[in-house]
Image (cartoon, rainbow, N blue to C red; front, side, top):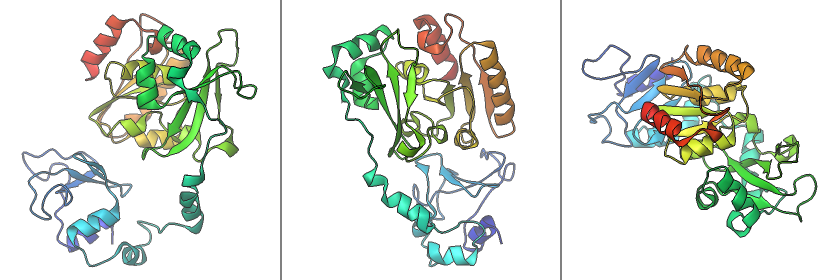
Length: 309
């Protein structure tokens, strides 16, 4: 028995695309009333979705849902542990290794203790030259400053802490503020990461599953779009991993805002073809006023905002 059949056997009404009039149900999803947002079994909105192929719950009103929360809200007598035994192929219990990993989250620390960004005029000057606000970067993204006291090769760099979707610090990246330094970006080594950087989308903890999302190649591209209110994330490079692609599936409208280099645009077309296999649309938007979106002029950014927001 599948998870959808289990829910039906417990009184939960599920709808597929085209099964109910005047209600939009995405292809590839079951839709139902969310017992967390409305009275169980008596809701008027089909906010809660269940992916048919992945057994993933998502509520378009309040966000991601855990099975334990939904079981509790529905008032089911089965506990999640009983459900694992009843249908182990759908949801596996947490392994000992994963449990130990979760318990070690609190112990995760970066090898540096950066200065506050606003305490370093050199770093602030660089940020302003990039047409960004140092106050916003420090307060919203906790960007820090590494100075001459930092061990080589991390001197005179911006420090970007990188968190997962739940906001838990998982890895980090640095960017030099010295134009003579050929090594622009230096990231954490694998042994210094809680989660690999390419399994994360930069800024994803600040962006709920909105109807649309701008997908940027680099951190500064994302920060420039975010500075004018465009919901965006960064992929740390032009290639996407399977984990990153899966994180982009829930969005209905996806806009790829990568650099306009020929090789990068080849990657962009491949990403569009891949995401086109899922629900929603994927559109490539090339920057015209610069080589990348971090250097785009304000007029073009406003045109982008009008198109995607």
